[in-house]
Structure formats: structure tokens, C-alpha cells
Length: 123
Length: 276
Image (cartoon, rainbow over all chains, first blue to last red; front, side, top):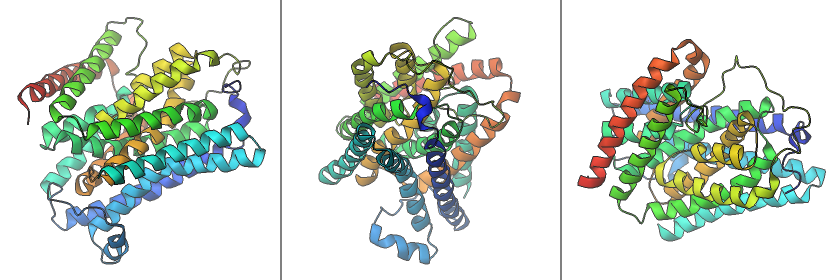
């Protein structure tokens, strides 16, 4: 825990991680915008029952110009963006040989993956 | 179409006011969707988490670029908030919605009380202020002060870790970022300067809300049709709020919001008592 305050040591890593977050946010919100335009333009009420997330339907729905495809793609990208930032940090710390921070990054990703597994098991 | 536009407009309002007042989106989005559009509370929480990730990722990117966030501290604590979020996500599907409504009423009352305290000019630590708001592009960059690096109370990490688990549970249960807990925790327990604590909390919110949202997503707790217009609205509103918020009179707006939050807290408490 000794180097938690070493704020300046990550100056080379932080801009790259910032870009991951910014690009991820803009790409994902763009997909959601397209989905929302298709939804509202198609006269579908947001309070209507929306199709559940089915990964195998994602591509056909996008190709077919259906709002659910773009909305689910955007929502998935939104949820994954913070984890991509952790992956970026993992790579950065790995290159520097900072084992402790690599371990922290791996542990975060394991916890997030555990959320998927427990959700699947419980759902 | 009208409902979709209303939802979009509601998202813009929640994002803008949340940004101007420094409130996390969830505190405003969940009541908007439940009381305004009649959504079940759990579904509103799922949508709110998606919106919270959007605003957090956008603002955390700026904070990282300006080197205001402490990456190492954030990553260490987000391990615990993510674990808490998984636990909270599991609990959220087990407990009665009336209990959730009661918890949310308590949260709203707490935020209202904190804001009212700020209006009276008391020296209250401002957990509700500047906690999850996107930074203004016009805001000057704040470099960590020289010699600041060793100043954090790393010896109190176990307490901070335990508090972070609590923040994660609260995030998953109530659809909030959890900055209300994380900022005071870092500032008061670890001695992290408030500005760095705020930026670091923003960084952590992404993973916290993401871990929660993934549980909701996998269990079918997120409605894509509701999440779309709301998330777009919140993103636009938060962007506008961070750019133009400094032009708005804070005092009158805060007073208005204390009233709105108290009213919403009473409505939520009513749901908790009556159900439905």
C-alpha cells in the first residue's frame, strides 16, 4: 500500500487511459443515439416491452436497422468501457514490471467477470 | 414519440442539474423514471447505472488527462467497490422493492439535508457537491501539490476498503455512483485532498457502476428502450451543465432542489409504505 500516493508516476499512462475512456464513451453513446433516433423515428414508445439482450441477434438487428440492435450495442459498449480502461492500465503496469498494480488490475477484472458469472447463474 | 421525447428531455434536465449541482445522475434519474414514467424501481436503477457510467467515463477521461485523479489509489479502492457492487447487485434482486424505495427515500433526504446545510453556509464536508459532476472544460488544471505524494494516510486503507465495499453495495442497490460515500472516505479517512478525491471517485464510479450494471444486464434488469433516450439526454445535459453551469445562480437553484429532493423523498417514502 506504500505507493498509493505516487500520483505523478503515472503521467505517461494517464493520457492513454483518458483516450480509452473518451473514445469508448463517444463510440458507445453514438450507437445509443442511432438506436434512439430509430426508436423515436419509428414511433415506438420507450415504455413498450423492449427485446431482451440476445448476442446472436445483435448483428442481424444492426444490419436490419432495428433500434434494439444499436441500443444494446451501445449499452454493452458503455458497460465495457471502464473495464477497457483497467485493461489499458494492466498493460501499462505490466510493461513497467509493476507486479502489485498488475495484480490489482487483474483482480478488478476477475471481480467484474465474477459479476457476469453470478448473474448468469442466478438469472 | 411524445413519451420518448419527454424521457429525453427529462434526461437532459437530470444531467444538466446533476452536473451544475454536483449531484450524481442516479439521485435524479431513478425518481424521474419511477415517479415520472411509472417504471418499477429496480428497472429504473438498472437504467440509472448505465447513465452513471456514461457521465463517469466522460468526466474521468478529462480528470485523467488533467492528472487530477490518483490512478493507483482509485484502482486499489475500486477493487473493493466492484466487489461490493456484485454483492449489492445480487441483493437487489432478492429484496422487496418497498425496501429499495425506503432506502432511496433516506438517500434523498440525506442529500437534501447536506445541500440545505450548504445553503446555511455551514462548514459541512460537501459529499453532495462536486462529487460526480463532469469537470468544466474552462476549469484550470490542478496539479498535485509538491510533496503531496506521501501525505495520504495509507495506514487507514483497511477502513477505506471496507467503506468502499459499502459504496459498491449502495451503488448497485440504488443506481448511484457512490461518490457520496467515496469522496468523504478518501478525504476524511485517507487525507486525500478534496479535489483529488473527487476526481479519483469519478474514475472509480465507472468500474463500480459497470460491475453493478453487468449484474442487472445479465439478469434482464435493463430496458434498452428506456435506457436509450435517458442516457442520450443525460449525456447531453451533463455536457451542457459542465460548460454553462457556472453562469447559473447556484443559491436559488440549490434551494429549489432541496425542495424537489424533499418532495421526492416523501413520495419515495410513500411508495415504501404503500408499495407499488
